[in-house]
Image 1 (cartoon, rainbow over the protein chains, first blue to last red):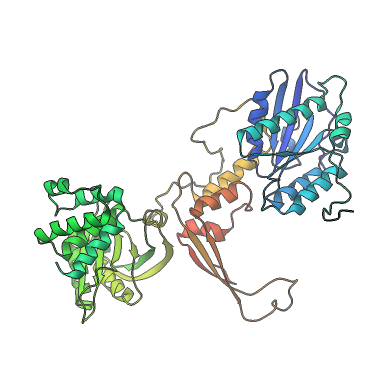
Image 2: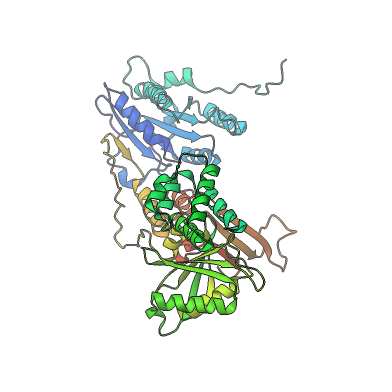
Length: 185
Length: 334
């Protein structure tokens, strides 16, 4: 099984690499363009993929991936399933602050609420942060890019006194033990 | 002008959208330039119709002239109503050499022989298509101009497109067409849609097709977006393969606009989790219908984005390969 390993390559100087994994391959392009434009001080490289495992042909040319972001569209069950299966191809070292989940359409009324709950449970069990993004407007994309860049810079070690593991203990997703809101006791 | 003629004109003017009214009337030979200028197109339609009726009565226009106007309108806007495709089979020796006047005479003679009260108008359009308008009557009534049938045929091709035909008149039209075009028979091509240009392009393969190549090259994009060197796609080859297969199955660029694909299933039910229905002798009859504003575009997107598995199943690709959108599927095949 070809696992993606976090520390098997040397880091680049003042460089951060982010991998966006999305089954639909739509939001990732917009996000990539915005991320690259927004960051002026650090050299940001974005890799786009549909799912893991990544093809072996790119193994040598691929830089060290600092942050893996799974983009899940809550409107599609397939999106969630594809992200789940891709998780198996990540080395466990990534789950210490180098993985992030990004969901879209969380406010959409037609989305079954169980799906968001299962994504939250997944993120909580892996100790990863869960971000909600709005992908239809430019402001939404810009905000999402901004937040991803903040996490990326920490994960790439470019922020002094902060590491990915430290940040993830603060930002990791939690699932309240009593989700049943009708219970007021 | 009698009442029925007035009604036909009123209905026709109501049907033509206001923006097109001036251009369509300008093409009509029976309205002189001065008359056209004197008509006020900014009036509400019912006032306009009264004025037009007055003009027609002055000039002594009859039903024949009004049906000409209707034909001009339909030729300009053919993409309404439901068009059905037919294919002529068993060409005789002189079928490819039929030319316009011969076809016209033969068709009119045949049809009037079969049914005496019928009104036929044949017109050749600039793009080599022959348009025929038929108003049907029977032995006791005059032709009904409110429900005409339109037929489009390209000479030297075995394809005919028909709209507004009832099943009562279908065998008559079949026979007249078959005799006039010197073919053996005519069968249903199982292709129908609202858009005449679309079904014509599909049947006559006039859309941009992509052929399978041994050395696949990525399809050139029309406006290549300048690629940011910092952004890289990991699985670009997969994406290109999927796009190539989608375009091979459905075509490249703008695709003919089909609205529906209907699959009538006459296969046995096969699902191991449902014991009551599996294992019965009779086929489980069902109908699967795909509907969209532009079906081929949607299917192509499904394949290129990975929603439908590749290689493209022959059930879907036979829509373009065979030029049909109605299929009956039995256990032995399509």
